[in-house]
Amino acid sequence: MNDRNDQYPTQHIGGTIMVVMMQVDPEHEDEFNRWYDEEHLLERLEIPGYISARRFKLEEGTDGMLNFLCIWELEDASPLQSEMYQQQRARMTDLHRRANEVIKARARGIYHQIYPPTGAFEDHSGFHPEAVGE
Image 1 (tube, rainbow, N blue to C red):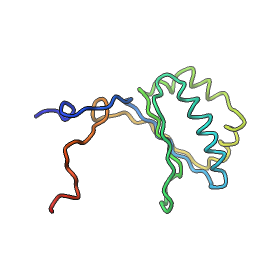
Image 2: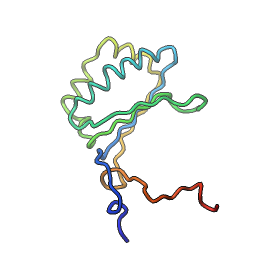
Image 3: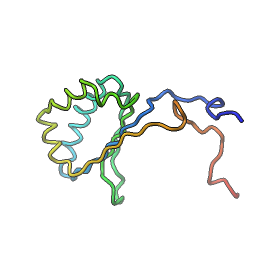
């Protein structure tokens, strides 16, 4: 049997993601978003090994989850041990300090890709679950 990766193209992406979730009260979201978008993202993406970042806000009416999510794509986990990362963490701007004070809760996880071995699987099979049994 052929490997699905041999049949369909894959996109080159990093093999590690870091998922960061945070809880911020609505009255502080503007300042938090300003720090994250205008300082934090730009600063971290300067570090070799960071590839990209995407931010999300929890849908209204969804309970039990932290309301902000950032998915960082990395080559591997090594940028988190780099000297540049340590220097950035030690340097705190006023905006960062204020934003950090309004984060009520946070969780972070680093995940290593297990499938496909490299790239991203893209389903080109034409299979659509809603069509099963019709």
